[in-house]
Image (cartoon, rainbow, N blue to C red):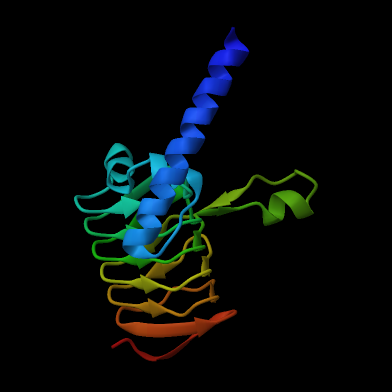
Length: 176
């Protein structure tokens, strides 16, 4: 009996997913991972206690104490690690594939477990653009109005209003 119910549910899910996928593709010329057809991005953000108007894709991983301001967009396949505390401001764009950490296990791993993981609060200011596939290390503070270029590795803090790129990132000018 349970197998029959499961097959019925799976068939229904598949049929409705195909329909939703076609409708979204016709309207916006895009397709999404399965979970993003089921989970409303704005409802997920509300459930996580994020600010008004903020959205987060279902494919995003959220760990620990993560606080996000209002009107921030968090793209798909992101990692928000709040194990050491993470704050993201208002009107930010966190692009697809971004990983923001507030801990690391380097000393734990290299010591054979003799040391604990290290944690440090990570802060992203207001009005920041974090490009696709950026990795931000624990303890970094990115000031208000910054732009971080795609594929950058940010291991040191960036003052407000700056543009930084590279691996490791370096400041290349004033954000416009």
